[in-house]
Image (cartoon, rainbow, N blue to C red; front, side, top):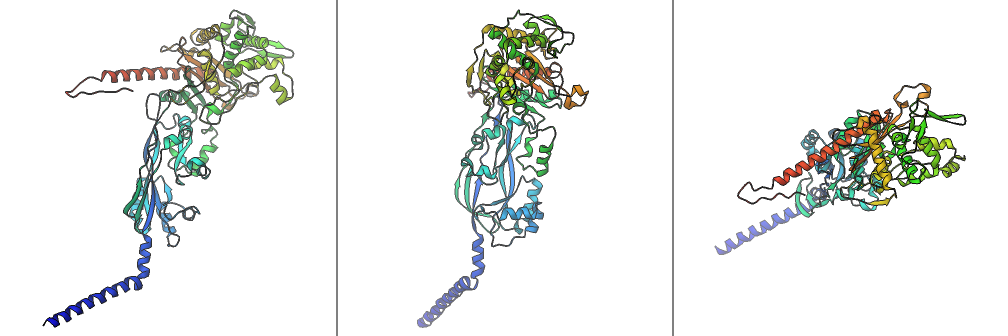
Length: 602
């Protein structure tokens, strides 16, 4: 009986052993190709975890941007595996050729997902998810995108995000970025990209053939980007865009005591929100071929004769060099003759006998012809250069134009000609060879009204870098402030439309002539004069200095000065509101419950 039981048990053990051997043979030999293929479909996937980008604020802590989800479709692709690219192109709404180019790039890694399409809509995500099982390794990723809350307003300054280019990836600071990463490509987004971008995280995960996560192997958390507090006031930008009424031009406003940029608006502008989602070829072509040139930053890159706004420099030079005094009088009969040429005044009947104060208030050309004659072009060049013209301002934003301040040496070298008195006449009123950018003219007004202190223009609130102090007499500064106040506030001033009940504004009008237009009787807008206006406020203790340039706008007093008024009033109204809000916050530090509550105001 015992032996029978032993025999049966032995047979069972042998049977089980045979079954196990058969199963091992089946798994390892018979079904080897099947399980080998399945095991090879299990992959390690390296997933970059995007770092939330830092927020950009204006000087009053108003957010100018926000981070939003940005969806992409990617695939883990193996060249040995068949993929129906025809069906995939229909699913993604892409050309088959574009998909194949992405799949077969030389720098592809079997561990790093290949990004096929970015900026997916929710409808596209739903469609892809419903068909994802048909395409091994296909999945939807969530990145961090960007929304520009004020659209076109301030776009040239704030900038935009765009895909990193190959040349950028080759640079030292960007080598570790994924090929389709979004980085700052324009404006503040580009200038402060490394601070705003943060450091992406990374996850190494194991996934199955369908791209489903099996387990986490390793993870490194992302580092959030740094917030940026700009010096600009977005309320000025909004007021300026409205005041331009569709005209092209620029406005630059500066805080005279620090060099902080309070506003830098260039019009027409563009919508920065089209770039992060992936701008199409047609959209880019439309921007590039637009005759109004929306991508041109006119504040830094347009240079035109400054017209009568240049008389501010001629007057300062004349007073400093002692060739005139405030009571020096000149008689204007409507023009002066020099050889066979006549140099006219804008007022055909003339201004009569005027002193310097009245010459500035009424913008008498003949008076400044005489000042220019007494100074000579080289001394005019000296003061124009000292006050910031003829060279880059150094703002960290975009490539600037230098403008041009001519002198005797320049004309001899560039034109091969001598300098004539007639050249001095037209240069002394900001015409002829003289050219400047809106930001340069804003710096001229800022430097004069700050007592000769010239600062490097900065985009960051609280920054201040004094470049140099232009040695100007106190009497010159005070006289210029009073005269420029008269331009706006006197009944005979050329900028009465800039007069404000909110704050006392001073300024200087200018009209830059377009060569040939009027002589031919042309009436098209492209032949109209350019309008300029320089301004500052309050007159007794300036907090804001600015320049306004309106391309083909006409008269500076009629067109540009009301824009300056709107900008200045927007600044002071915003400042008043900000102070009121802070006051409310401070008054809010009351104990309204049994628990002690504290509100900290930064």
